[in-house]
Length: 299
Image (cartoon, rainbow, N blue to C red; front, side, top):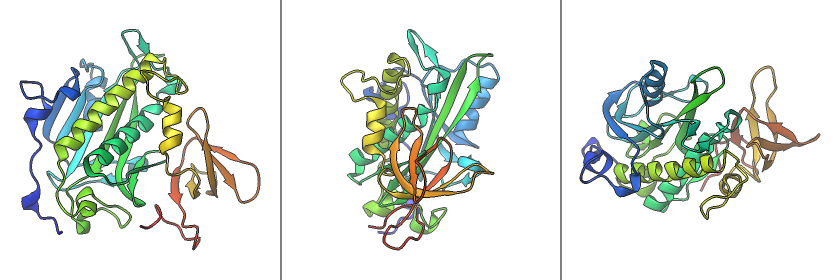
């Protein structure tokens, strides 16, 4: 089914924003919806950097993000009413909970897990996580996640983390060949509001549990598996041949993704030599049958 602009509807603000009809799954943290913004991540950072009070787990949404960006300053844009875009302000301390500075990078994996869960629940599509910050369907990119650190003082850091999900976008409007959208895979429009409600609710639950565990990814909290176990169980990158584009001057690394270290780094066993620990890099899933490079396996 081909999507057209007539099938793109605004978000249901009454279900998202505080008030009588706000979905109870969202909890009590603020939710704000902007009609248009350059970048929800940038706006959250600006507010914190300017000294504005930004409540922990505030969720900032927009109908149209005109200057979205991903890793390595890649541009990410989409038509109005076509995507699910949300950024979160994550404090490192609230109440008795704390996320130490060296554990703040886990917010990216938590948002990837929340996005994977929401997409699966709403569409039944087999969404999968790709290390370190993407969500895929049938090997095609459906969502990208980006986090930015915001210094509070000389010792304390907060984090802004956001996700953009391709929802009601035509195949010909997708930004690159290895991307897809929920509508493309489902054959028709998908409820952006429900996707966002589930992402927000699940991410907030995970961050709260993580803070209660003192930012220790190995601890189970609230009857759920530990964050480390959840990542290991749901990361589609594991068990695949990969190519890792590392920060220069490190050369690209090709090998088998064999595990996740306790700090969240990817463990890659090259064709020759010892296993390498990768903490920063862009991963490409390789097609084992041909040796060619791809963002994932075909259906």
